Image 1 (tube, rainbow, N blue to C red):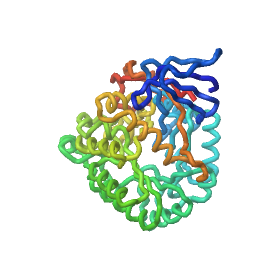
Image 2: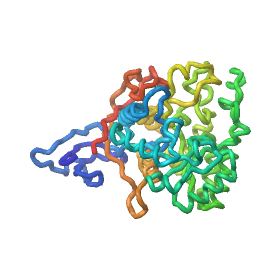
Image 3: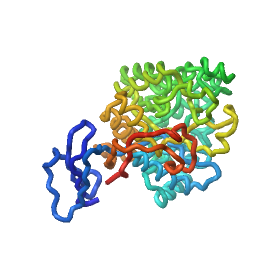
Image 4: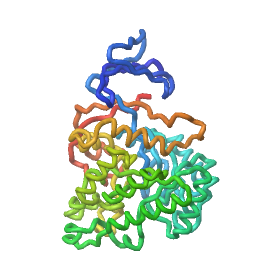
Length: 416
């Protein structure tokens, strides 16, 4: 937006600033508060008491809703993203958005250009149909602007196929995004093992399955020379494994879903399916280790892992109900309420984990761009509060444990 001036706002470092915004995203000038004079006729926004932040980029979102049109899901997800301070997202492949061929990618891009209020980029499939057996056409997807390949939380069934995929991906300069898992250990399990799972009579998902899976992925990637991104890390030992790999110079990045920072397996005490996630919620010590991993840079990104589920599916018994919760509408307010306000994370750490690093990892542009993909700016008012209700959830489903809870802060939609 041309000739837009924001006065007396607070930047992530706590400084009072004025800001002039030009016509393009990169045409932004910051100065100490009171030092920029706006010309006559310019649009001026008073930022007193508000934070001026780069909008977030969500590196892990599912937007398909069973029983709804794909275009409608794109529209709803875009509005939900803006509500939560997210200007763009990496959309995971799914049965409705199977990004394993050029036709599906073109169809998705067309739907996004017509209906989406937020930027959306497709993550290509590692395997055809996400069945873990046959490699998808990576060169075709790369030609369509795909920069990240994933089977959306599923580990390929063949280690040989995964290794060959890594070799191919390394030649194309793409990033392989996978979740640590040993399917033989996690099959027919649905929550963290411990006193709560014993009390509920549910089979536990052992933490070592994730940790062994991550060790395997890192070892294969090191041999293949591939860049890997570890999805939805959930255990303290996983953080330590990734920290060692980074210290050794391996090209690896990692993410944590917001719910793994906020909740533990004890939240499932009354079989609440809104707390069923993949991987499952863990121990308090795991939450602490994940937060420490964000602070020291071991964990690069905080993601929403936004997963809309129909009310009917979530009302099934705990074992049958699908995993996942919606998080886009409440993303930034929840981060502020539960992480920043209590002092667990600082605003610079949040900006790094939710904007700067995700933009760098997901950047679909050609390598000749020197600067990373840049986020637009938004204003966030930490003084406002609201109780999460159905009216606040633009995504169209209600599978969130935040319903009825009070959150602090409101997002002003991205300004540029």
